[in-house]
Length: 373
Image (cartoon, rainbow, N blue to C red):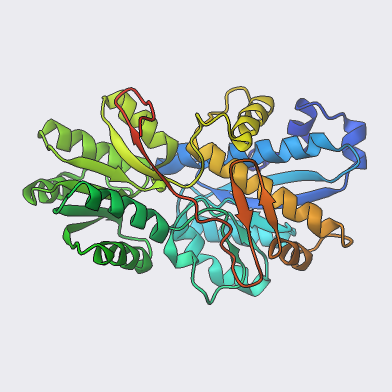
């Protein structure tokens, strides 16, 4: 493992205000993350990583006698095979748990390895329904899945009497996502007019755009990373497409920034509170802790999602440590009974449910980036 792959450890903690003497006294709890720090999802991956790292730094500063939380992040570039290799490395290195993987499709491929190692995979930053099967025992979710997001988006579509609906999704993701979209539409008596699978690494989407425009849609629903959404919207707008654009949370803060740069508006489902909801304690704390961790870290929906996952990991680890030396089994046991209110966002698990939250918001982003609805 290269030194550059370790994005958060003792050096970052020293910079955040902890002396080497204090660091030496604190027991260390290490978590592992495989994230897309390069490639088309780099912005998303970095935001998730920064949110988790900020939560860990704040928790380590808060109690000089308590545990020190370290995040070991390996770059997978959003590639499945690299994610699998990273997860194997992290498991072999003895991390207590995995946290904040940033590709749902890649996370799905590592599930057999995770189940065999009996290591918790917590807070994957994706709504992918393929990692939410009832048969899984080690996947725990801090955020809602796409089934919840789709229901909220489709209720909006139905409310405004949109009839012709297009769906754009990544072809390498779980068929369970398409099933969730179909179920959400069926529940309100709608059917997809056109369904368009795409390759996340394609440079041109001209054929897909032509298909969408020919369908004369009232709206287009996207479940992809930011790059394809941005590219498709730009060309459809140039062709004077008159309908609405919806995106799942997967496109993240990066899409909002892209839309502002292009002067476009978009409706998005989000699975964490709004970053301008400063009355929510978790939002205010995230802003403060991100600034303390790295003044250049970007505050937004995606970093807040990572921060919440980091805070949940911290709370579960503290609870597990009360019973003695922390282990993977003890961490999972503590997590399965965790009920924590972070201030405007509650994560509640049980031995019967690994789903910590069902929170979904639908927001409209105007051409200037303001959250207007």
